[in-house]
Each structure stands twice: as C-alpha cells, then as structure tokens.
Length: 501
Image (cartoon, rainbow, N blue to C red):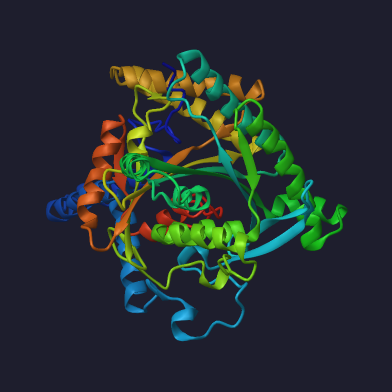
C-alpha cells in the first residue's frame, strides 16, 4: 500500500508548543501579577494570578478545534445573525418574485456567484460556464470527471497516482494564477433512472413473461446494492492574478474567459494523462445548474433524467433547470446541521493521522448506509504563493531550531513526535528549492438525508465512518451552511478564502 505522511502542522510552536503570539500574550498577562508581588499586595496578586490562568485557558486550550475566544466570537455572530434573520433564507420563487430565470438565486455563501457563458470551445463549440464570485473576487471553472478508481490497484500504481496528483499541484503553482484546486465526490444509492429509460426504449411486447420477470428481479437487486458516484474538479483563480493578462486577451469577460481556457487546457492535460481520467467534461451553464440542483435535492435527479429522455422524442419538453430554480426553496442554518428543502445535512472535517494516510482510505466515508442517504466529500488543495511559501519555510525552520535550543537549555526531553515535525520543517526548504509547491490540503465530508430520517443518527454514522477510515472527525458547528456548499455544490466555494467561512 501507498501511505502519505509528508505533512506537518501549519505553524510550529517555538516555545513549549506555543506560537509567538500566544507566548507574548501570556508573558504580558503575567505583568500585573508581578507588579502586585513587588508591592506585596497579596490579594491583588492572587486575583491577577487567577486572571492569568483564565487567559491561559482562553488563549491556549483548544475546544473542538477552536480556542475559547474563537467559540465566543463565532457563537455571538451566529446568535446575532439568527436574531436578524440572516440564518434563514427563502427563494424568490416561493414569493412569486422571480424576474430573470437565468439569474442564480442561491443561499448563503453562494449568493455572490454569477454564471457567465464563455466563448465557444472545442469541436462542438460548447460554451463552458464561467463562475464569477463577486464577494471573494475569484473566477472558477468546473469539470465533471470519470476515473476508474484505485480499489483494485497495487501499491506501485497507487504511488503513481499520488505522484500525478502532486504533479498537478506543481503545474497549478507554476501557472502563478490558479489559487486552489477542489476535488468533489458525491455518492448516492443508485436510483435506476437511466436503466428504466433504457428498458423503455428496448423492451419488446413479444418477450417471454418469465424472462421479463427475472430481468426485473435482477435489476431490483442490483439497483438496491449499487451506488452512483459523481466527481467534479474545480479550479479557482483570483481576480488579482488574472486581471493584467486578461487585458492582453481583449479585456472584460471575454479576456478573462480566454485566460481561464488556457489554464483549463493545462489542467485537463494532467487529468487525462498522469491521473488517468477516462473522461473530462467542462460543464456548461445548464449542466452546472443541474449539478447544483441535485446537490441541494438529490431526489430530483430521477425526474430530470426522465425529462431528458422525453426531450429526445419531443423537442418541446423542457428538461433544463433554470438558475432561478437551481437552489432550494428554503434553507435554514442551525448550529449542528443544515436544513434545505426536504433534506438535512451534517458536515465534518477530518484530521490527518500522525502515522499517515493510506491512499484509498476514504472509501468508507463515501459509502452510504441506507436508501435515500447521500455522502459527499471535498478535498481542497489551496496553493501557497512561492514567496509566501519560502517565508513560511524559513519561519518554520527557525521555530524548530529555537524549540530545540530551548529544550536543551531547560533540559527538557524532545519527544519523538516533535523530532519528526522538526525534521519535516527542515526538509521543506529543500523541497521548495527543487520546484515542489506548498499546499495546505483539507477535507470536508457531508451526509444528506430526507427530513423524515433522524439527521443526528446519520451524523453519528458519518463520524463512525471517518474513524473506521483511520481519521478523526471534527463537526463543523456554526459553519454547517458553508461546509455544505463547499462539499456538495461544485461551484468553487472554499473554507480558506475570507468571506467563505
């Protein structure tokens, strides 16, 4: 098997695991206590010492991934948003206020996105959907891809795929424009919609009744035991990195689209080549609207597939999903889950294990347990700019040296885990010098079930699947709406850019 363990903490604490900001805050917090001690004000010193201990708890002790200060600020913001009605959203269609069917009407983090039709592309002259996020000043393109999978591959083949993924990230960094690569996978129990359409087309009235019954029984068993997988790859480009070159390509939307098409070609070459994708199809606006709608309402897919089959016989049948109706009719963000239409969703992130992650270990997370359950997973690769990566590498190496020197001065034994992190920090500079890119990958997994099922139970099942895969789950409380949009709707939403989380 191929195991990946070449990762480390984003920031290394240089004084007993504390960062520079934490150490300065705690050092300044001791000054009142020492001032009271110099005045021999024992009661005041006791009060200041208790206050300093509270400062330690608030600053240092993490509670489910956040500090106490972070929880206080996030809880306050969520409570204020709930009182002002910001956590409750209703579509314009529910009020009869739809003006433009092509204008997206989406909740939460998706509200600032506009969909443009790019210039004709390829042999079929299709217009790829160009996503413009006005709130975060980014542009994005999304492709639906098909991969044969690595479940039956040996260790050498898995390592080759891992090297190909690293090469894709390096290529994106060398473009100096792509800011993030998002890989999204959705798995749902098979609904049999395509097969029913095929049977209707090819069934014969003269077929033996016994053969028809046997075929139906086999189809019923296979459908209930099968799952359907959808995979999307999204590239995100900030406006600041594309504005200058877009002027040279004509300026405006057309110039930016041409620059995005060039990046699209480089990424597609890597997807089809080293990564072994058997199909890469960049989504048009109607296809992206369909992916968005089925993201919010998985049960609508069967009806849309049937409408597409009917349109082949009757061109007057409207099988498209207008952007004004691509989102949910209503959405409510709660503390521990996200409610949209007749569905509830729970999202969690995963923490990488110290011993490393085996390629293919995410399979249990993506496997639904019951009919009607949908699992989705996002793996994001934010790419750090070369100059910033060199500075972070230098800071990490300096922090590792300081921590090692302090341990020697205080005669404190260096733990094995700390030694391993120190070695990785010192080896980062050599990897950057050889042309490798620095990225901060993270993952978000989501389970979606109808409101007739208990979402809390399926949230616990999702956590159990994460642990069974060898990772540790962390429920994204107070950010369930953003986590759902990032891990289920392939429209370039991320947890790293300001305004998303």
